[in-house]
Amino acid sequence: MSRLEGLHHYSGLELAPSERFDDEDTNHPQILALLEANMRVPSEKNPPPSTITPESLYRRRREVLKMLGLGAVGLATGCHSHAAPPAAEATKIEAIPGAPLTIAHKLDDAGDETQTRYKDATHYNNFYEFGTGKGDPSANSREFHPKPWSVEIAGHAERTGHFSLEDILKPHPLEERIYRMRCVEAWSMVIPWVGIPLANLLKRFKPTSQARYVAFTTVNRPGEMPGLRRPVLDWPYREGLRIDEAMHPLTLMVVGMYGHVLPNQNGAPLRLIVPWKYGFKGIKSIVKIEFVETQPITTWNQSGPDEYGFYSNVNPAVDHPRWSQKTERRIAGDGFNLFGNRIATKPFNGYADQVASLYAGMDLRKNF
Ligand code: MTE
Image 1 (cartoon, rainbow, N blue to C red):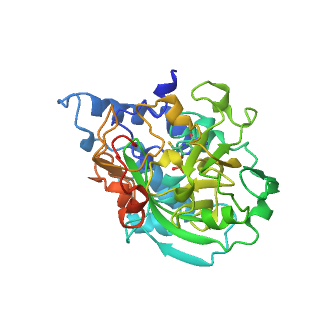
Image 2: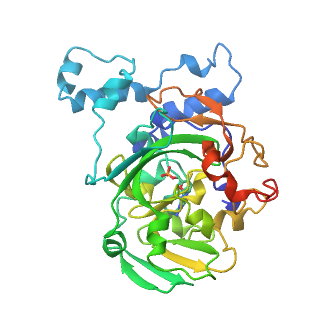
Image 3: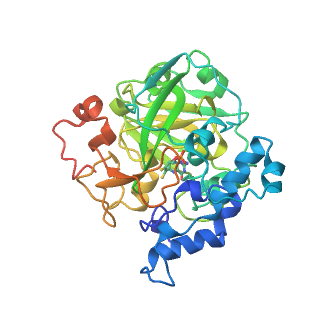
């Protein structure tokens, strides 16, 4: 696969995660049939997608029954309905694995928008170190060890060195922030993240006046991350922010989601969330934070400089060279709407009031 085929085998024909969250769905014939149905012109032989009932709806029902301890009853009474369970039912019983976190403050910065289900947010991922398919990170990250973890702080700061994750986090109360996340591939989610403002963390290391940018690096463990064995990107994954972006109060260093510790596929144990930028700026499984003087090399920008800028602020006025950025497919709520939920993309992902001033006087078409 060429490097650009990464984010990049995007064709506008993705499946909603709810239709493929079971790991074994990756090559599921029903799913392949659905994709194909969408690609082909509808005909009698070839019905439009809306007339096809995905098997996963049926499987979801089985799963619901199983969790309620009713699996056997359901089967005994011939309860093989293809109807989806009501959203409330599915949401209510959604079990969140992982240790619960103690949260000091909560902030809903997604304006009451419907949240993405935990299962969707954790089974429809981009984490190429575990593979390029949306189901690969959940399927292939089970052998990854996010504990113990240490982070190197380097560059233009008074305090540098290697610090354990516990030491890094200890002084900071955890906050929950509900943010929209807009992927450059034109899908989006609404996720309750748990973390600390990056600014509070960075200040403790006393960056000097030469620290104009902050560079982040992901861990590089080919033994635990099978995707690293393929040269899809120039590993390790790297990202960067201007220091004022890094210090902005919306920028979050994340350790959890949905009130619990971050699952491996979402970037355990430490990842970045910058809600007004495309999702690829949210680098996962961070092992190094470096204060630098010049704009750092970032993975996607290096891979496709014409397609992925350093800034990567969400901007519906600047299309990706291969697709429009005017709208996005919102993956939220019951998630069963396979081809719908398309909404208008907002400048800065709806956070313009808070962040537009960071870019005053800049040409955002050039600095995309
Ligand atoms: N970080 C690393 N190290 N590797 C990746 O492949 N993918 C990015 C970003 N962070 C990626 C990464 C992309 S393209 C997106 S959209 C988000 O992670 C997805 O985050 P999520 O899987 O938690 O939704």
